[in-house]
Image (cartoon, rainbow, N blue to C red; front, side):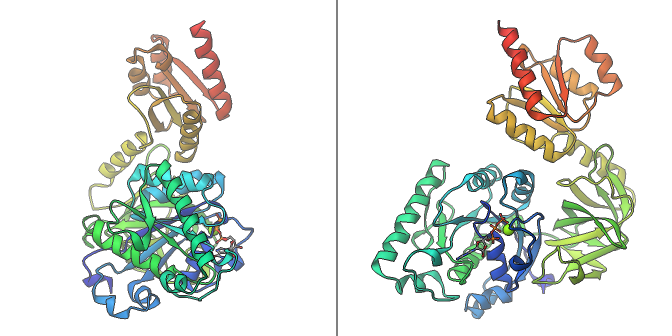
Amino acid sequence: MAENKKLRTPIVCVMGHVDHGKTSLLDKIRGTAVVAGEAGAITQHIGATEVPIDIIVNKCGQPQLINKFIVPGLLFIDTPGHHAFTSLRSRGGALADLAIVIVDINEGFMPQTIESLQILKRFKTPFVVAANKIDRIPGWRTNPEKPFAESFKNQSENVQQLIDTRIYELVGELYKLGFNSERYDRVTDFQKNVGIVPISAATGEGVADILMILLGLAQKFLESNLRFDANNPGTGTVLEIKEEKGLGTTIDVILYDGTLKKGDTIVVGSLGNPIITKVRALLKPRPLTEIQTEEKFKSVNEVTAAIGVKIAAPSLEKALAGTAVRVAGSDNADEIAKEIKTELEQVTLPTGSTGVAIKADTIGSLEALVNELTKEEIPIRKAGVGDISHRDIVEVAAIEDPYYSVIIGFNVSMLPDAREKIQSSEIKVFMGNIIYRLIDDYKDWVKKQKE
Ligand code: GTP
Ligand code: MG
């Protein structure tokens, strides 16, 4: 179906605080019971679920809209809400064209709700807020699978008032974070206002409204981002590296541009030099299945964006989650490898024009270090993955402020030529494998310098 459509499938990231109902909402959309089978309550892995457009418009009770929308469907990525999974959330947020932020209407904003919104703000990702668990509001009369407006009409005045009070609390919280918002049916311009949709992932009320808004946002604001050429070389992001029985090390990838074929040469980000390898197998989830449930994979010869796909290939052991995967032609693999390496050395994190330089061994640990330094209000000028290099020393040596003529390295070592260079410079290097200790060491040093 996708071939003759003009746009690729938008990637929708589902984010929010632990237990606020992300997996349940996807589950409802899918009509399966992943939640019931989940080990513990925490989603440990990012999954991807493709929902074709015909299923969405039917679910919304508006099959006639099939011709109105030019996106082929929506590709949902679930993310875990537990605080330990910051890097999975920001990886999902960075990838996503759109997002759903789920908040339990009875609990309101919680730490990971705020963190999710900050990630979306950083990447300027359009999103909708799902105010979930309306069925738990005392006195709520359930109308399974109905649009919110219809269900709302059937509620008592008390319940209606309570819903509006709760929504205004959310509007206030969103405003504090710099977003204007309104209940979605009162929003006239979704570019200026975030829509809040009261839903129940348990009863399905309001779920159709969420899907319609996502389709509308995709159509209105993302057309140019989503226009793509299937003939482009495939480009994607590694979500996870996984050992699979009979396949060896595989990577779960979200492909967001072009086409990827069995036998293609691919370049994959890694610590050190990127991996250049050949695709041995492409394993695709069928529509309406979850990427983690292996037995539902089928081997395919090619896939086209946007899609979640598992790649089996030799030498993937050192692949790095969060990095790029790109298809190479007959003679440009080395060039692509160089580009991916440069991107990795300059990870886009919230850095400023002044501050310390930091290096870490993985994107995840780099993010963790950035978070901790930010909490301590220590500014960061540059953040990168990999060992401390000669170039790092040269750059830092040029910084005039003595408190920022500093490199903090987490779980990395110093390359020999950097070690040589450092002897002839004034810069201070802090290295170690415990984040808070590195930060304490730096703070103590600054204090001593100031005395
Ligand atoms: P993490 O992945 O751990 O961050 O949680 P999550 O956001 O995916 O939440 P999940 O979907 O696992 O739901 C948590 C609990 O809330 C489960 O017991 C769900 O059954 C319940 N739940 C989710 N949505 C609703 C809802 O709309 N109404 C009611 N009554 N319960 C819900
Ligand atoms: Mg979950």
